[in-house]
View 1 (cartoon, rainbow, N blue to C red):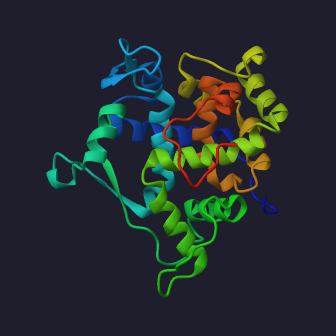
View 2: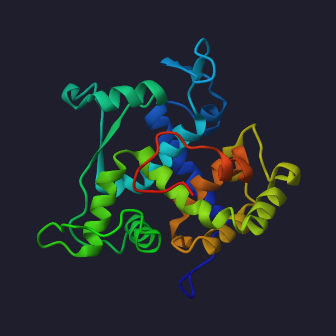
Length: 264
């Protein structure tokens, strides 16, 4: 973590949750807490365990998609397929049926460095330390290797949930090996040490009310490619941990594996 970087405050976390709430309304027409409580069946989908039971939308994936959007946002533009029908690709139709999303985010990968953006610094640091895509055999002309890796990763992730998955798997390496401090800080904030902070009612409202500064700071310290300037991402990951518990965050099997990131 860079020296003399300001600590994460409860006010900054509350603002990040407020911004994520606005995104949830724009994408789903629901609040974050409504997303976690929603059990709308997925059209045409059934669980693998019981083909007669309709699968409900996964709140973690839907909120994870919002987290992915915050990372992708500087390099993408939202598209409403109702306004531009030709943008309604099969992939978007399939994903909309699963998440209820009303918009797609069309990617324009960066061609030059953008160190002023926390999203760019996040991706550059993540790729440098985690090395999920290996060495590039070909670099786009006139593009620095660092920028090319970020651009390629954004393309390979393919979707906002792909970014969320990659970041989650990367963060697990540190949060789940060093969960004593992070888990204890979350549990202390919500008063539920037996389940490492898991709450099922109004997790976003609970997080926005404060008391999670220590947990957020512990996350920023534990994960080497995070820093306190990346509050929107830290708040999003912390929201999932608060809602489902660090044990679930660390152990649940994420569907739709991405080939360039190993779930180990």
